[in-house]
Image (tube, rainbow, N blue to C red; front, side, top):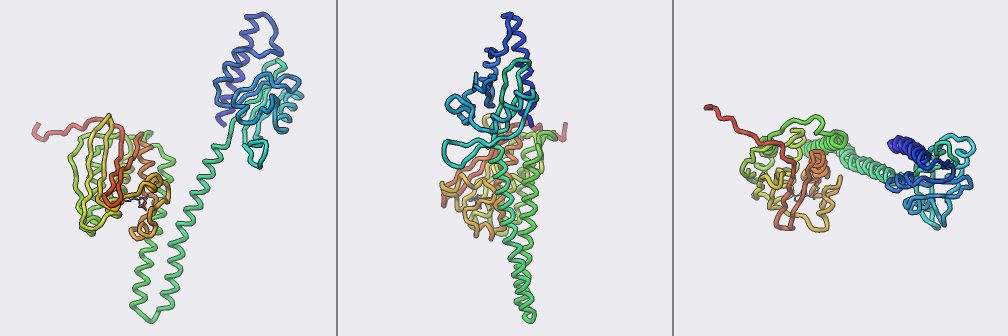
Length: 373
Ligand code: ADP
């Protein structure tokens, strides 16, 4: 409802402008629009129309025309005209939402939130309108996310249900029972990983780590992230090489930063052949700390690279499933970077490898304490 506060403020501003002008010119402004008002309306990001007693627009902003509120210099849309008539009759400010056709043909409409009010004691009426399509688009993205989650959850749940039937059917064959039970464990773990990552992601979307920030030693973040991946790397004979330390800190949430670097290292291992190398470097450049995770893996094609940070996007869903991937890892990295005022970028060449670089604003230098002093 932020708009309404702004609108109310705007009307006050207008009253002030009218009074000032009246004082200056010594005449009533009842059916004249002040240039001050026009100047204010012109810089607003919302559409505006000032109407005379005869429903004739005396002024409309360019946006009012773009949005189709004004067509052929007349107000279009019965709903808006009805609100204007109510204000004229009662003098009471009206607000609400109206649907306007997007064009002269077709069924597409645009939802606008609108406020109509009489301007001071004059006989002028002002309508302020803002486009709610963007908010609706964000809602649609959210709905999509929920639909995706449901789909992703159904896969392991379906597998568990089939496997439990298989166990029942194979009661008398201990080997088969063991095989199915092991598969059930894998599916159950996938389900719990997925739920955990969904929780992590939604926390990240709500939280602002900078509100509750501490100074986080980046060398420590990298160290912790590597330790968490060491067993996984060993099991694949992948060597994790740690570059030089940076002796710098970032301001933010340590657990989130460790999780982000850890996700990058896990991906580097998952999408690389056995016996390769993953290098984690860090350096300061252009006022930013850059943490790079470099692999010698399968790489990512140009057509996929723009999409890998989307929630649930995987280049090869079968491979990602095999490695226990949820399709949320990079989405989490992107959110952590963004919440810390940084970004994550990627370079990749299929068959050569990938480099993911997490960039964060530098907090301060870490001064090593010398024990002998
Ligand atoms: P997942 O859980 O599937 O790994 P992510 O969000 O972490 O999900 O990554 C999305 C997709 O991006 C992966 O499924 C994979 O196809 C691709 N990807 C991520 N990191 C790498 C990498 N280091 N090398 C090659 N492909 C990668």
